Length: 87
Image 1: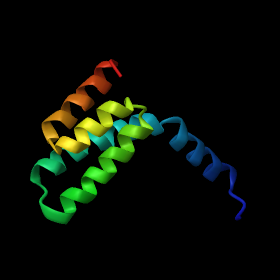
Image 2: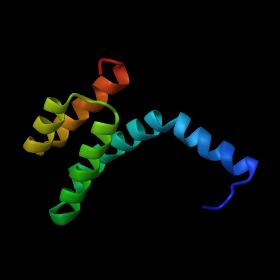
Image 3: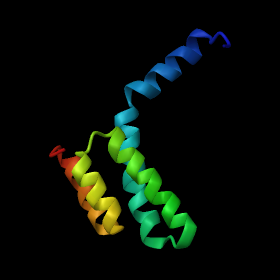
Image 4: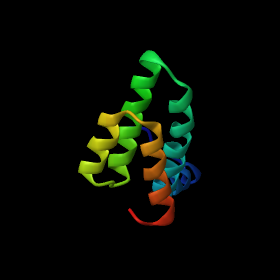
């Protein structure tokens, strides 16, 4: 494994320190993409959304329900709850 410089170590550390906010922002962006996507791309976006929700510690029952419905509006509600601090 390569040895990282001090600068690189700090960049990596800041990424992991802010990962929750980065994931929340990415999930919010996925809502827009899901409204516009079709076919295989839509399925791939739902996989990403499912992974992000699990990483953000959304309750498993809610993750399964949102993914099963395939409704971007329900995903938007999850994003709103995350931003409001209810999850």
